Length: 417
Image (cartoon, rainbow, N blue to C red; front, side):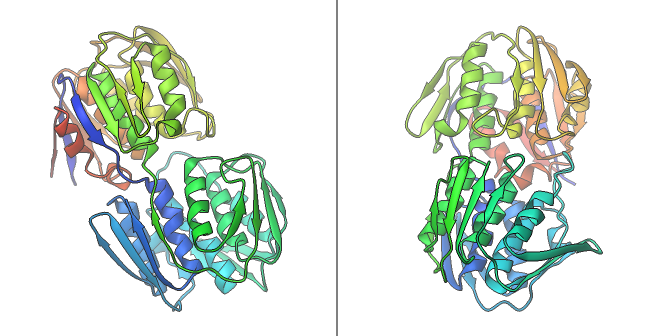
C-alpha cells in the first residue's frame, strides 16, 4: 500500500494549475446514458473515481477511451441495467446512474454505493424524488431496484439542498413527460455544469445555480462535447498549501467565484489574496489570526474544505471554532492531527482549534477519507521532521498527482510503497 512522505518546513512559492472537477465530471459522465452515440469531454481529471465510472459504463455496454484528460464515451444499446456491487462499492457517485437509466430505459438495479465513511449520506432524497416522478423502488439484498412505465414531470421540494439528489432528478426529468420543478435545489457549480451539458444535448433547463430549477421534458437527447469546469476544492487546497507554509502561490485555471467563502475567511484571517478572472493567489504572510468557520451548502463554506482549513488554523494566532453541519463524521482527521501535536478539542460537530505556528511535529498518520488525506498532507508541510501519511488511496480518488504539484512549488514530498 502506498504512502506519502513529507518533510516539513519548506515555504511554497510559484504557480500551479488546477485540474478538472471530479464532482462535476462524475454526474456528467453518467448523463451520457441518456443518449446513444459519441460524447467527448475535455479537462477530465485522471482519478480513481473516473476510472471506476468508466468501468461501470463499460459494464453497461459503453465504450470509453481516455487520453491526456480527454475522455470519449460511445454509448450503445445497453446490455444490462444493473450497477453491480463490485463496481460501485468504492464510489458514492454510482447512485447517479439511477436517474438516467430510469429516464431512458425505465428500469435500473443499482447497488447501494460506497465511498468515504464521512457520514450516513442516505439516498432517501434520491428515491423519494424518483418516486414522485413516477418510479417504483425498493431496496432489497443491498440493491435499489426501480422501474417505471414512464416518468412524469412534477413539483419536488427538498427538505435540504442535496447535491446528488438534485443531479439525479435533473437527469431523470429531462426525458420525463411534462415539466418538473425542483425547489430548494442545490446551487453548487457542479450542478450548473451538469445542466450546461444536458442543455448541449438538447434538454430544456432553467434556474440551475439557484434554489428553483425548472426542467421541461423532451422526447430525446443527442451526444455533444463539453469542457469540465475547474475543481474548486483542489484550487482551495492548493491555495491553503501556499498559505500554511507562509509562501506566495498563484493558483491558475480556476474560477475564484467558486471559492469566495474560502477567500473571505482567509482575508479575515489576515492573508493577502489577489483574485483575477481565472486565478487566485496568496501572498507571503508571516502570521495570521484564528477565525471561526461553519460549513454550509453552497455558496457557504464548503464541507470539502473544512479539514484543510482546520490544518491552516493549527498555525494561527488564537483559537478558532470549526463547526461541521453537513456530515456527522467529518472530524475523523482530528485524531490524526492530534498525533502531529495539534491542540484541538472536539465535541459532536464542533471543534476548538488552538493555534500555534510551531506546534506540529512529524509522525505516522492514517488518512480516513479523501479530504482528510489533503488535510494531513497540508499539516505535514509545516510539521517539524517527517510525516508519513498512510492509506493515500483515498487521496487518489479526488486529487490528480497532488504530490507533483506540491513538489513543483518547493515541497519535500514523495510517494513510496
